[in-house]
Image (tube, rainbow, N blue to C red; front, side, top):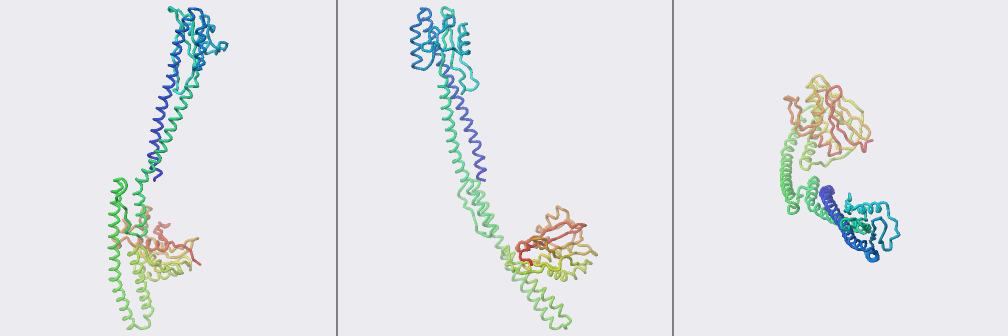
Length: 458
């Protein structure tokens, strides 16, 4: 995010600097170019006046010495031509051969055309350093003057000016980078603190807060809102934990009393009731374990899982027998499918509780005279407990919401329920590294799969 913020601010800044540098470079180059040609025109005017007197007197000695001295001092070649186009006074370069362009300029000057400043397409271009001016005497052309300046001088000046402006733009861009980096650090430091605080709260450190006195005003307001939200979450979690403790006390006592009553009643029954009594005891103990697991989730969002080797096929068989009477009362047959033994390492109580939630959901919504297939199988690195019913099923959109808390299908009608069964099963499986997958079964109905990692399976 910091990099993106720097880029967002830096790109317009560099664009502005480059634009301003370009405009300044254009203006400076144009000024240098115009100054060069202005000097050329001034030299032409001066030598045209001197050449008029020399041509009128017919003595080139004076103008020739002046031309030679001018070349020595300024390095600019000046040539005076007579009306016939011959070099009349040229100093040390009198034997130089004119180029075609210079010869054309002299011809035009002898025809009476005055010199004009060339117009360059680009200000940094100095296309020509030679200008020719006619020499008039009483309105008649009596000769011409050709001034050939050194174009490398203005070109060098333009290059130096361009390099200087380029260095200025680079230095200002570097300063802009440093400025934007510092600005981004100042702006984003509250965001980073917010991120660290949210990560801490996610880990369970409910006392994590953000300092509200630094950063832009908008982020300070966000920090205050976050701290308020964190305070409220901490209060809710505290109330939830208090409720869990109270529920633990209120539910344990009736459950223990129920188990004691079962033991008391068992003393008056004959031996033929022993299997039923033992099954009742086991269900009571299992309810106690389930209560401890659910309360552990309510207190801290996690449980102290007891990991051990578990045969998922045996778990499926045991829960099928426990639910068979309830299913038969509704006219539904529970059918064992899958492998005869699927071993993995997990928490038996959590798996049984999640499987009960899936079976309860299937029994509740399956029509009479149908069956529910329950079984275990291993598929690669996954162990699966599946519950497949033949009920009305769910659409693709409804399947995605099936594990949400308090969600119920619009077609559930007056069926009792809170919409928490599959959501709680999902949370339980997550504590042991598993997950709950809900999908539409082929041929109608719903397929609920409890997926557990196969590490440690034999």
